[in-house]
Amino acid sequence: MNCEKKLTASRSYILQNEKGRLVAHLPHLEEELEEEQSNSEILVKKARKAQEHIEQLTNDLASEGSNSHELENNIMFGDWLLLSAIHSFRSSHGIFLTNSLSFESITEYQQRSSLVQEERSVFTMKGNFRGNFSR
Image (cartoon, rainbow, N blue to C red; front, top):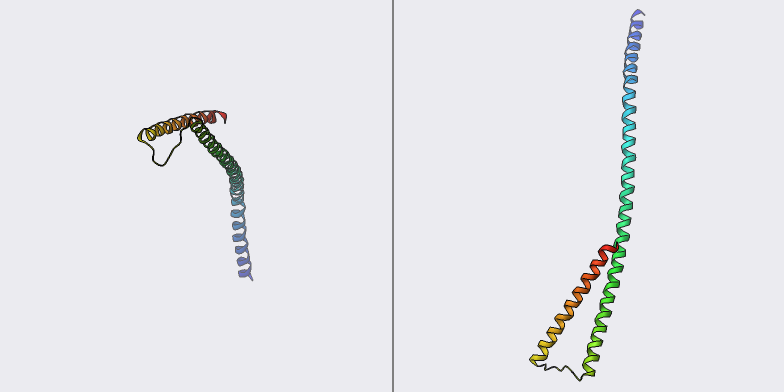
């Protein structure tokens, strides 16, 4: 019986020591838990901000695509107007192009074409210049 009491007391002592060690370690574990919860909240906020940024970029991209399409349509309409004006000018002045163009008319056409390209590049640069400051 004495042996049983000693064994029970020994077990009780070991359990008390273990309980004390665990209770002492508990504040450290609670602190770690709070830190992990804080980190988790920060990550959720960052993910939310990233999602908002992605949505904004998607909207901006859609807007740019729309603007690009509109500009492309305007350029095509401008080309049509230019060709119409050239045709009207040629018709009114009796200038008709045939399949056998003379060297002079080809050179003149190339010069006009390069002039149109220069005018278009100036227009494009002006449009880009305005576009950079309108945002």
